[in-house]
Picture 1 (cartoon, one colour):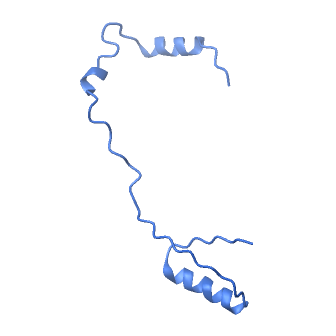
Picture 2 (cartoon, helix red, strand yellow):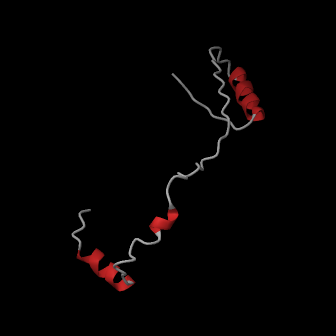
Picture 3 (spheres, helix red, strand yellow):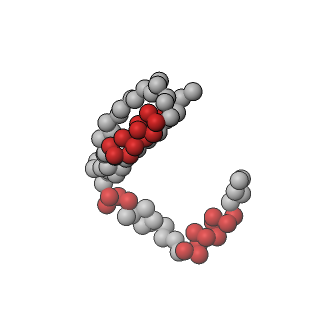
Length: 78
């Protein structure tokens, strides 16, 4: 049987290890992983020119009502 226990600090680990010793489980194998916390935010692509994105509808301006009408006409397959 394999049991995986993830703890956030060393004190919790010591308590769990002590528990296993009290119930006389002799075959406890400890695998320690040092996980270095990394941010989940990644830097964006700086090669994209944002000025080009602002003129998407420059030649053909649309209102919010037109956008809604066009999206309701689609046949959505769910």
